[in-house]
Image: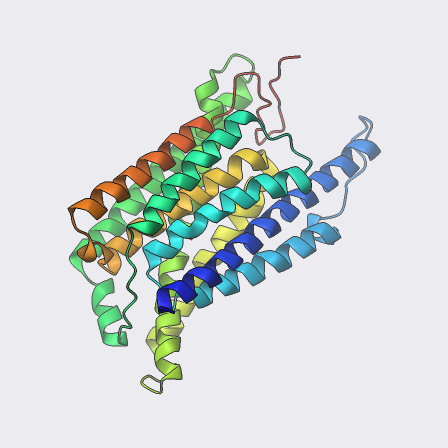
Length: 327
């Protein structure tokens, strides 16, 4: 069995665990909100405990952590772009978990959107990079200073700044004039939030890949794990992974899970694939056919994103708690 298949299987199990944990986190937030609503009859005096006191939320954190540990292990055996594309399994499990755990009603539109995304990711996996070479620390350091990667990082900073600006603008518009605002702002708000989260959070995949690479070298006695480079990458990994975790937890309290979870995963998958392509130069194994099929897979993914946009009469969750609904 090839190393990339082992990495893929570990990653699939980890992805399902992450998605299950994510839905439990959302359930914890829902339970806290329900407790607040049932005990606060307009006087505003009852303040529920922090969400971490709810057992459902704590179990969700456990599953989320275990899933991420499994995903970290998988990066030692397969290409980053391949494993990022395997996140499609989360969309399948997300429907089942949202229905069973959160008692959500799964619409036909969501099912069709998820089908597009899954088929798109099947193309990404089938025609992606199936290689995973082991790099020395010197090679990793050289790749971080590569001009193309530096330009990519600058572009990533621009995308994050623009998305954050759109989110703040939409947040202000919705809070000032929630009833008369067009629907595109209600779609753009969670989407821009997910873009910022995914762009920065996906960097943790790159650092995890580098760490797992060095760990694999250490296990083969070809590298001493204790070095300034190792601890620098470890610090960057903890910062970006912590940011991703915090944004995920906050996003679940702001938006509907059936909408924000796919958006989170789409943004994370897209930027993880791009980062792997640029940093590890995983595109070098691609021929014309694989490029076409890979682009077709990305097209399917984007179609799925557009279908996940909420309807005009869908409840719009905003940060100030205001809702716009049609009876």
